[in-house]
Length: 207
Image (cartoon, rainbow, N blue to C red):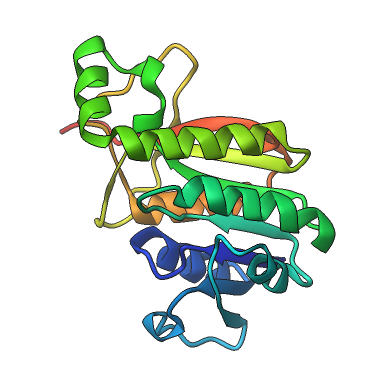
């Protein structure tokens, strides 16, 4: 497959690129600063541009099969980039879109105290993600939204679990970026995750 990756210079995005290439996919990375993506591979194509620019998204999507976004940032980045994807993807003939979100967005899974604390500390980021995700859900795209627990830079455990609908989040939940990257690449090729929101964390038993 030809996978477009947004956020490829970030901590998780770099690992998504590496994982996709290792799995035999071709990767097109749309990045603001190409010099920050030091990985070299004949199957990696780097395009300079803004993820909030529909024309840049269109260029990246030429010949693509799916798009994976690991974008994170301030302001209205998620809302604006999601709208750019919604505008550009149909014109490019691409419908499959996988978006990495944060467990902090799933407000209903937290207890009241944690919900209040995280809302005060990260309210603008949460609102931006919620707005972008609503637009994606309301679109005709074949989307998957992945809510990952707190990210770590440790090695992959290979023990990713998907929370069921009644499970609660805790700020102690953690998952390695490497595990998230593997999961996102697999989701891009999996019809089982089509138009679904899924919550993932590390299921390794505590010692």
